[in-house]
Figure 1 (cartoon, rainbow, N blue to C red):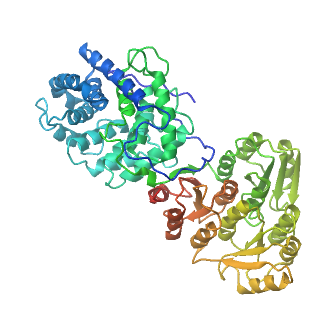
Figure 2: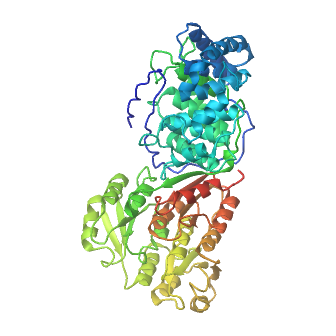
Figure 3: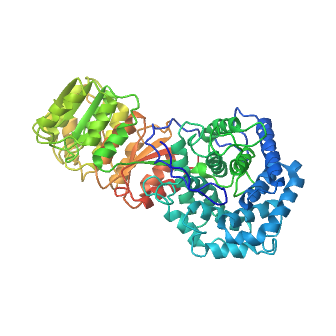
Length: 630
């Protein structure tokens, strides 16, 4: 996706750049639980000597540029910071450049970027920030940040000022952290500035918030920006080759500061290699990929990254962000778009797609389990029309077969006929009521003698949805029951299937003890199945207990709102496909049982199904803040 050109800047430094929204990515593989030692640079496969040599060449180039007298003040401050990171062999140049910077200090307060970078440089050089060139940098930064913003509305500048003030020994006002937190996009958690999620602001935020980690909103905001950067990059070495080299280097600094796990360490190897490939013979790096001219910002920020340092610290790691899962919101403009975006995780298409009503849950409840059996996604449709997002998903998936659940009262024949445009065949599974539909689905697609069948109330949806993810994982059917009676079509299906185990979902308020008795009597005999109940104090507790049936080996989990069903229905199919559970959250928070389940499972990745209206940003922040102890 092409990015807009940065605005002109009279200082010659980079301007704001809009980042594309983080794409709905394929679900990552299992994250390693091990943690690299603090300061371990470089990543496996990149020799420390190569990075040190590259940083040395970059530092030499920066010192030479400063010697021309034409370097801007912000560039001069960055050069001092980079020379400090490159090693003691550059001490004389560092002091020389610090002297130049001190002579320019009286003008620093006029430009917030220069002010913040100068304060960082002064700390690197070991000078007094309260009296540098006759300027009290601490007081100047405090004044700039008094209202929470440093200069204009470009959050990148506020981040620079926060780090400058913190490194100068000053107290960062809460208003500054609140301003950065307020800029977080409610859907992606990337940092917005000037309209969209902005590259420089997002890249700097994890290290800026790491500097003030104990302040309110700091860790949640830093984690959100980290997640955006990580998901945007995916398996690529950098965020994007058409972004400035400096942005990619700044993001790598943030990954280093926000100390991450072995999976991130392996990705860092590719990032360092990419940056090495950008270096010119004279030691400089270009502003953009394959540009000819050297750029001070790109070179200085990359020298910091190669040295395992950042703008916020001389240490390689300051915060244990690896203790918190990467959280991705998978959303859309409506429930149909959410399901379509979930289906995008089937990047290679799907042989079979399950289509269910997005307006009524009863016939749809068996959809996740069936999708798990056939290895495809669940898409939603309106009763009498096929939504555009569903059509686009079907075109991308290119299925051979589409299975529609429910009669024409749920999905009209006109919609079924339209579905024929996108597959070789369309099958409809119907029945006299929701119970008959669930029985027909089980009898039509599952072979006899399976290990497990799930049973949930057909009067409500929460237990059936979370059970659907477990059923999809186990390749088991999900059938529906009345509160105190097993409907005949369901009992007939269970007699046909002859499972070894029937798992009843929910407490006696959902499924009475009479149902358990009827199951044991109706399925009795020499090969009678074991009948067990999974219950809990509420839907959140039931979901957490159901999750225990899925091993934690994949180190992934998914969450959906416990107040509505469409997002969880489509999400359950994906959760089952990647051997992961579906947990429930409240719109505005994480229940204790869900938090405890995440702590036990220690996932490296949590997918959240639904937009900000279904799961408020504050709830997603709470998911990010769960300490999984990875």
